Length: 99
Length: 312
Image 1 (spheres, rainbow over the protein chains, first blue to last red):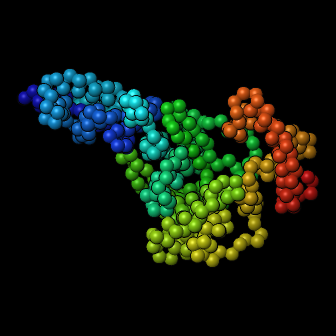
Image 2 (image 1 turned 90 degrees about the vertical axis):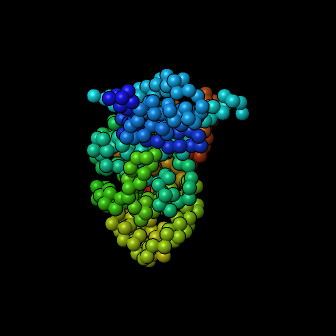
């Protein structure tokens, strides 16, 4: 089994409301205890758009960002992992572990 | 604008986005606890083609009868709490609870019923629910009454207090919007729906403007009489007059004093425009003593005449 197939996938949480304004996207995790919206702009909003409802790997997202920005994938990955982890802590995305 | 200001503006939740997100959240949380709600007015009225696009300052939802407490409790878990409302009499029973949240720029108004629909409240809700439409806001499914009922909701909202609030032009605008929808037999359809909801008389100015032939009820029942009285009211003077009139003799002075001299907290709730501090309060009381006393006497006499009471 390749490394890519062993990597956990990330997907949007099912109960997230989303509405855009210009370059910003406002999100609300509706099953969170507190009803507090989150605003993402710039690269944060771009990353959010790359997270599908069906799931993808961080490697894949990093590769897309790398091809768009010219920054090396390895440089992107660490920051990306931190950011997506913070999204998970806010109930906006879910990580699906592989068997 | 500095760079920091731009960043703040970029991340600040505007009312338009807030209304969409809060509507989605309210619908989701209501469904989660098995409570039926309908979204009223707001951006969906524009989607339905019955109102021009405008930014709402709150989310209006109608909750099925008997479930308001459960819903407000659920919303409380998310940080939405009841906004202070002065304990004052109303000609028409208070129809909503306003909720606020420290992190949101808008309120949520939870309506227990919709004033002007004079049939039994459960029957009114079921009629609205059966013909509901499903829409999507912020990517979430929400329910709203169909365009016919939604139009009656808007019309009644404008007709409830036409004398006290700036609703001039609402009915002509609504009629113009509806005519653009080119629905067959619109006046008859709207009248039938109004009849089901007990609103042929309360929404009569709207129905007539639409081209329907609705005769005025010359012997109104209590609910309709109160509706009409409320429609003529500008402030709360008539409601106080009714309360004083209906109160036992020994309690009349208490009501009268409370009407003219509410508590400082109620005073600020009733007159948010008052300047902060004691000076603002004193000015408010002085103004109220001057105009309120005269208005109250006049309103009490009108109330007595309209209700046929002789004990005022």
